[in-house]
Length: 247
Image 1 (cartoon, helix red, strand yellow):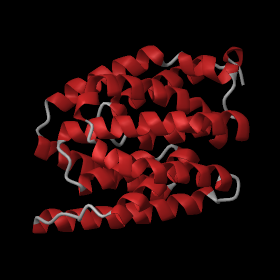
Image 2 (cartoon, rainbow, N blue to C red; image 1 turned 60 degrees about the horizontal axis):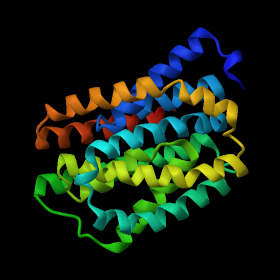
Image 3 (cartoon, rainbow, N blue to C red; image 1 turned 90 degrees about the vertical axis):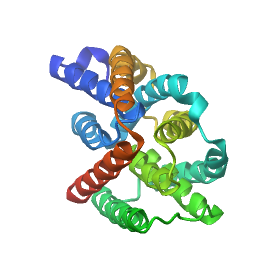
Image 4 (tube, rainbow, N blue to C red; image 1 turned 180 degrees about the vertical axis):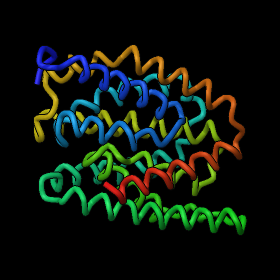
């Protein structure tokens, strides 16, 4: 795959994907449901993950630049080791798992997690900040981000369960994905061979739309109160889980 082989439609979809990625990284979660299948349809599963990763990293950088002071490192330091393990597991199992079955299992896990969150919301209870829960969600997040760039939903469940305020939620998620996405790069280059100079050039086309998406997302998020933002994320998480189940 090279830039010269792309049609005008391919490039247009790539730019739209970059814009949606930027919005997602600025806190408008749920757009993953649209851009992951779009790229997979155009370029194939594994190739699309390598093409998307540099776009995600570009968006992570701008999201961290804006929200870095809000990150909660207590949670990040608990998540990073298990997330790295999840990436390694995802790399190894990527060739040996049925995509449809994986999506169905993921959807069921997300539905169960959201049901738990809604019950806690109604009863005004907190999930205790147990290390085992962070290890479980970190591993699942690392695995799903490697296999299908779908960890946004998983981490939304974890951060919402910890009842992080709006800006802390976004800042903590931004740092988490910046670090983990950089950690994924060597596996994509040397193990899956899904990133090379040609794919990097194609990904770079999306930079202007990534920047635009991030700042549009920041503006939208600034207009939403903490309580409405929490409800919005829960709703988008449920929609994303439904989309996974139907894929």
